[in-house]
Structure formats: structure tokens, C-alpha cells
Image (cartoon, rainbow, N blue to C red; front, side, top):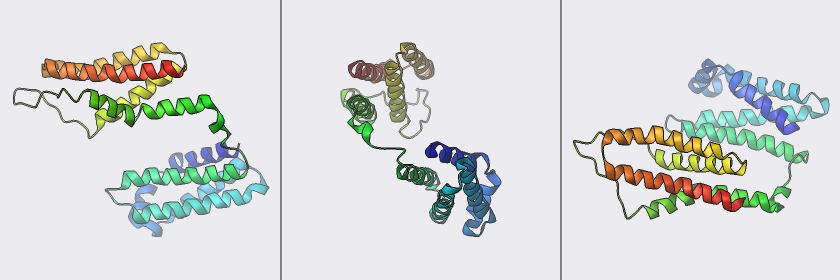
Length: 231
């Protein structure tokens, strides 16, 4: 498949064959960096090598030209604050170009949207992200965690970390159920218990422990129930 070959070429060119020194030089000199053009040349050559067909020469050239445009835009508009965002935008645009080429050669279609089973799985996975987080938040709204006091052992937490941990754990539990590996669910519960409740034991706050325990059980319960309903 053209898609697989171009993705492989992209992974090699963007991550394996691009040293950190090249990245630093590009970010410093931007369009004046010689490594930008060398990087684009490598992508073009790799695309041609993996396609290995003279009639597809224009695909390799197209990949090279679009890669230069996307990388040039990234270097021009990227700042320290939005560097992470531009990394994902950059990768998404490269993937979009490759996907567009694959659509041109009829490697993909939207026929899968007619499959009811796939639609049900997509619907369930979507529910287990932000909608499930909101459900759990509302269900727990009648309780609040114990406020910080001088006697409590408190540690700083990453912004929205709990939300994303919950989303990831629900999606993993859902996946384990779909592939009939319930032991994976047990592993997730055990892992969550070890990492989460050891901190709560140090805090010695029974109400906080109960609050987190209810939230965790609701999160796992929603994922398990959703998986069972879909199956």
C-alpha cells in the first residue's frame, strides 16, 4: 500500500534520520538553515525509494514540496509557548497529505461508515472520553475533596492530569473487553490502586480516599458497562 510505504518513509525521515542538532539549527536559523533543505531532500528520496516505481515519481516530489511548505510554516510561526501544538499540527498535516495521496489511488474509502458494528464502537469510545468525565464529575458533585491544610501531605498535580488519566484508563478497559482479555482490566485496577492509593495513604484523609475510590470505581464501571453493552 502507498499509505504504508509513505508513512514508513515519513517516520524514518522525521524521527530516525533527523538528529537533534538539525532540529536545533532549524529552530534557530529557520528558513536559512541548510538542514531544512537536506531534511526535505531526505524525505523526497525516501518516498521514492519506498515507492520504487518511476510512474510514482511525482508522488515523491509532492511529498517533498508539501513537507517543505509545512515545515517552513512551522518554523515561521512556532514559539516556545506553542511549540507542542505546532508539533502535532505538523505531524497531522504530513499525515493528511499522505492520506490524500492514498485516497487518490483509491486505497481508502468511507465504506466503513456503513458498518454498524464499527459505528457502535466509535460511538462508545467517544462516550468514554469527555462525556464520561462530565457524567462522573456531576455524579460526584455532591461531595468535595478534603481541602488542603497545613497538616496534610500535599503534592502538586499536573493540569487536568486526572481527566486524561480517566479517559485513557476507560479506553484501555473498553479495548480489553472488546478483545476478550478481561485479565487486562484486572491489571488496570491493580496498577491504578498501587500508584493512586499509596499517595492517599500518606495523606491520611479518609474522605479524600473515599472520594477518589468512588470516582475510580465509577470510571471503571462505566467502561466495563459500555464494553458489555457493545458486545
